[in-house]
Amino acid sequence: MRIAQIAPLAECVPPKLYGGTERVVHWLTEELVQQGHEVTLFASEDSRTSAVLAPVISRALRLGRPKQDPAAAYAALLADLDERAQEFDVIHAHLDWLHLPLLRAKGVPFLTTLHGRIDQPGLERVLKRFRGAHFVSISDNQRLPLPHLSWLGTVYHGMPERDLTAKFERGRYLGFLGRLAPEKGAHIAISLARRARQPLRIAAKIPRSQNRYVREQLLPQVDGDVIELIGEVDDKGKAEFLANATALLFPIDWPEPFGLVMIEAMACGTPVIAFRRGAVPEVIDDGVSGFVVDNEEEALAAIARAKELDRRGVRAAFEERFTAARMAREYLAKYSQLIGSAESKSNDVAALSAGALG
Image (cartoon, rainbow, N blue to C red; front, side, top):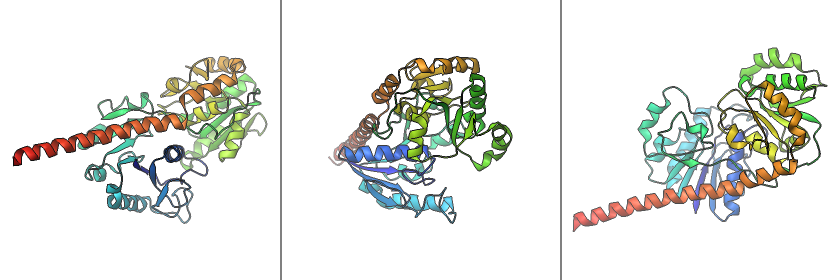
């Protein structure tokens, strides 16, 4: 199958540091190539892939210097797609909505995986203009604001089994990994760690938009001993960080569409203690790969119980549900469904034309 993967341009593929969507695109692309498909990846030129790379810009937008105009970068991406769309059996976009007007007019089967929240005001009205577009959600919860969208189904994220190695010894600290923003709950993680009398290590990106939150609510709590902020980590640092944690704290306060860090922790054998928001109950097998809690008191009880969980069982839950091989198989089924539907419509049109001529 000839497949185009269309990545965002914010980060290279795979990302050097932070970048969930680009990381998933990388895992999916590599697995599709391994399974024998002809894959072309539209991404920044500093990406690394075993697929055919279609470089759109020289450097990814977030870390690239000098800073590039994002609108110009995405205009170049759409121009490349316009020129090459007919080369592929199916196009898989990870850009939310930007590509919809173009690809709807190209006549090539395409689908869009939505990676973020979709509860923005006015969005449903706009999307009514693109009734022929098909979408995949990354959790059932994610699609609740737009239940009437043309959903092909839910495909949970998956990562390569060997990317992260599990450790089955008891960890040395509680971990928090993610963006430092109020909805991600780093301040709650600090409170939980202090109440549980356990050290907390925070590996996180600090967005410029959250400087005040970090300065006022987090930094005064960081003492370098009980509460330690270690900043963003690369893939190697992430593996060590997660594998050596007693548990990953995920005290979110927003409708998390998936929560990639949860399966990364599971791959390391590290249980996850997460608030019941968004996709959390779909990802965590309560009492097996971690605990799903409703408040801080339940989270404290879960921290005390984390050592009771079998870390081999946590890893096994990851291998059963969240591998890249499983993710690729499910997407291939969606691709075949779209191609079959397109061929059926084409045959129907040909038959009607033949009948009219006859």
